[in-house]
Length: 416
Image 1: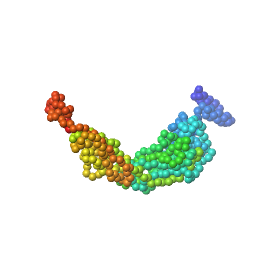
Image 2: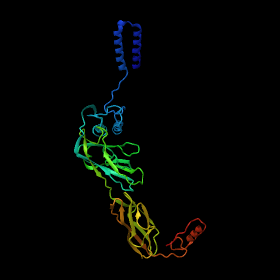
Image 3: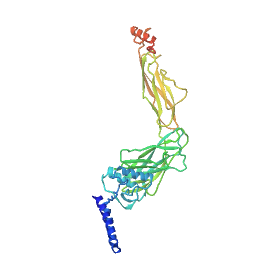
Image 4: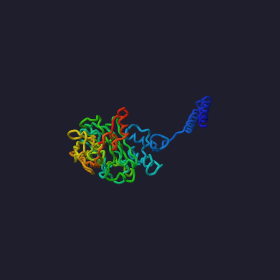
């Protein structure tokens, strides 16, 4: 029906022009053309853009959040300006807080207002503090570093937005690997980075939440960096705050406004290294005068950089096999067994002792010795020909010998 009406208006106008070309009828022409324009406006639908519908989709949803974040972090012209939805002029972090609150937290399906009546204060806040880490010198041998951005925020903080970059002129040598929030399941968070090689000339980290979970002194999020060239030496990690423009800057959201926290840079300290051991204890058994049939593996690793240490057995019946001369360096695996050659029947305890552990960081979490137990039974004398070590010589031993001679088995048991 609308299409028919549109064609009817066009046909009637053409018929009138063919039959009414006199100069005295020019006013009628103007009136008809104006009326036709009005009719066409009603015939062709015009949709008004909904406030908060940043990406022009059919509904306001998480896609609008993504679109708004892309604009804030990556720049460029927005699809439209229906993103300014928090009653304040300028598209900023506060608009993301507003749409997240509406969709997920406070009042789903709430009403936005894209007619701003005020602007953000971006007032300096000496009571909100962000602590940004720096590492002036990364120790050689360290290929990855995970650092925490800390905060001490007043109650009422609905979120934060942190734009970081690398200090101009710094040695660098590291690139962004990953990042996450310490309270990942509370609120809505997003981490963006800019360039394809992840060397962080610009990066954005933001969190939106409620219930004052950001208040007080705590770690807010961590970011992990790795060497651009693994195994290289030198380099630093000199992060610096970055202000992209008037609205895209480090800020804290509180009470619908955006305030600027105090920035404090701190020298990152590596946590104490821990010498990690794959077992907590070792247990062996044997008969008096015989070695144990078991050989157990113990792997030593580090929670951070390489650790050097010395390893020794407290008692001579604990045997460390294939132990190299000098100190060991993580990661390394050592093989341990026990020998009752000079031991009578009984239960024995000893330990594998770890000493002189040193780290490139200079701090080592104390490592306890590894307990060793040894159950020694009564002596056993195996008669000649007792191949299966059961104390008897019978047809079973003969069949095992024949199978070995014919090549069906590769070896015979050894009776200790």
